[in-house]
Length: 91
Image (tube, rainbow, N blue to C red):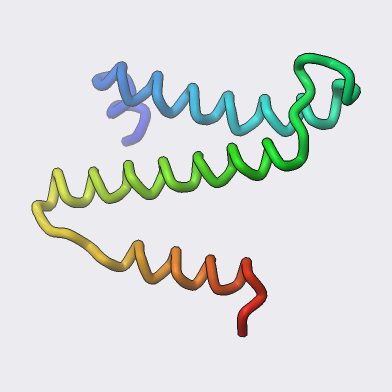
C-alpha cells in the first residue's frame, strides 16, 4: 500500500528518502570520521539533528491528520509530553 502511494506521490518519496538518508548519514559520520575531519558531527550535533527530525515527524503527522481527516488530534501532544518527562528524568 505504501509503495503504491510513493509511486504516485514523488514529493513524499523524495522527502521520506531524504529524511532516511539524513537519519543514517549523520550518526555514521560521527562514528567513522575523526574529530578533525570536516564530515565529523559532534555528539551534540547528532542529538540536535535527531530532535529536529523528531519535531519534523510530529509536524508531518499533524499535517496529515488535520489535512486528510479534518480534525485536530491532540494525542500527539500526550506522547511528546511523556517523552519529555522521561528524557529530563522527572518521575
